[in-house]
Length: 150
Image 1: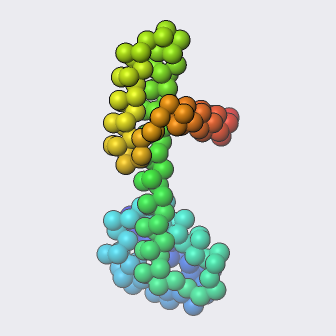
Image 2: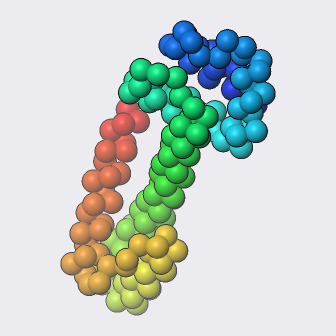
């Protein structure tokens, strides 16, 4: 985050809390070392959440903690999205192998699912029932994703 973005956050806080930051330039310089490595989008979400829940202005530590929470959510969401894309490809291969009755393809599919799960630190399906359940859940998630995009 740059100094202009930090200034934008401080301006929003100043509007909401009249007693906050009488000297904006000084406040920017004070906050910059703590916020420079953080995402502006996450910080903006943190400031919004803070203002909705608190009657008094935040400390820098409160903003940093909330911002880090939003950044973790964002990273987790990206990992889940990546896993979902890879898993979708594997589902198509699985469906193809079932239609063809190809046990070699099926075994290869199960091995790859196990590797993918371990890469994302997810417990792999223990049996065909769990694999089918995971496949169904993925299809439901994909349907919701497509619905959101419309």
